[in-house]
Length: 308
Ligand code: CP
Image (cartoon, rainbow, N blue to C red):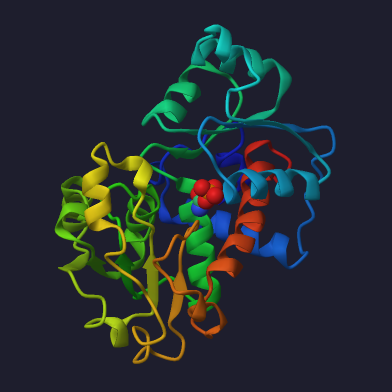
């Protein structure tokens, strides 16, 4: 695998990437973290267009480009842009394209990054599109899992919380299929993993079990991936009120865990992991957020052709 395969390409969905692609990105992130590769992005500009709120994705992309000597055009919300005067999404993108070398887009609208990739000629990176995909999160999750477990192969992975609207778990489940995982999907029935993801896994011969209680599988897990129940994805706020707080991982929950079991969470968290867990050796979510910078350095430098 060489970076040539990715040059001037887009990262829209984990479904577009094969195992070799994933390992290439992970190996590059690792080489950047270890200082074996030092991409020079001087003169390159990344446009970071965040139509939806973000802390980690937005600032880790900004940190990534700046650490490599490049610059960022940062849009956090449309409040100070001409979208407020009625400018369309496509005209906004066709304009920003003229000012930048690569565009990173977060939007609440599913398919918006794919649409962007069809109308502009610079690489587009999907930084989350509604409840659909969050591929750069899945990539940093894979990097985090390999760092903690030594390998991505044959792991037992519990996905906990909002598996219906949680774009991070959709992307992660799809991206692990080539590595022979066994999944445990732990959620309230209303927030179960969507059928299209489950049927895709079944077609690949991936074993998965759906459960309501996390405690019964904790001793088996290598990775516990916890997600927030997302208020903003519920049309019916009464439904959200009923389901929030369905899972709270505390020190009691993880008492029987394997020594090497790590808890991941894409963050932000509300109350689904007790803060007492933060000092446990199982907690890995803030390290995971740091890994996002190395993975996003890899993505930006490879797609712009700086790493060849
Ligand atoms: N993990 C993640 O996407 O976090 P932000 O919403 O803060 O970017």
